[in-house]
Amino acid sequence: MLNTPPVPPEQPSTGSTTTPPQPTSASASPPPPLPGAPGTDPSERVPIAGMFGASEAILRQPRRVWFQLTQAGQIQLTIVLLGIAILGALAYGLVVGTFTGGDQLWAAPVKIAGGLLLSGLICLPSLYIFACLSGAHTRLAEVCGLVAGLLALTTVLLIGFAPVAWVFSQSTESVAAMGALHLAFAAIAVGFGMKFLARGFEQLNARFGGGLRVWTILFVLVLLQMTAALRPILGTSDAFLPTEKKFFVSHWTDSLKLSDKGASRR
Image (cartoon, rainbow, N blue to C red; front, side):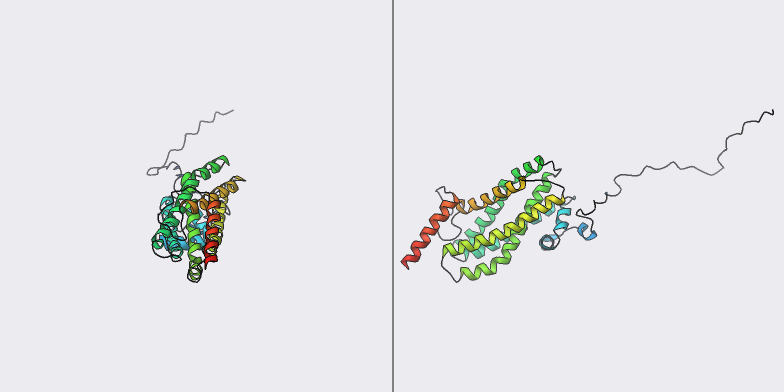
């Protein structure tokens, strides 16, 4: 048999260069959102600017708010939502103060805005703990944003009820009737706010189970107790804040008794 000489390796042609494969950068573009998650619609990825834009988004595009709360500018959005809550509570408090007039024109707005923010701050740690116990990977900043959205949506709805409340405040002298009317408006507004919070956690893949229901009860009880801790919100008083401690049920019962006595004298 003939010996076949070995074939020499091919030499690269003059002037030709081989480029090694370049590794792809993992941070070149963010991963696409999961199907059905906030951010799948391109309009939801548009940043929210200003209080008016945030108010419109929380009413018409809540998914856009939920998505933006998971992005880099979540702190700015949370601050804007808190600003909406403060201004909305002050505006509605001014309408509440027109029932009595005088010092209540500034005292009622301050008490309502302060009580609302204080309630959210008091209940924030328990909400974050329930979120962690549920196994959710939600960060504290996202929980703060959702609570700010809850407060903002609540006050936006209260502003919508403000003209109706003003009409009754100028046409009746019954503290009990006005208190019941404001409580009804607050219940509706907080109900929509809690729906925003619950759906927001669902969109962030947080499964609370009964934990969110327990937190809802706690939040509502704190809000109701604020009506006694910051009394009077309706009516008059010599002091800005009360010196006697009362449970909100006792405060309401005493207010109804005083209202009945005033009506019988007339």
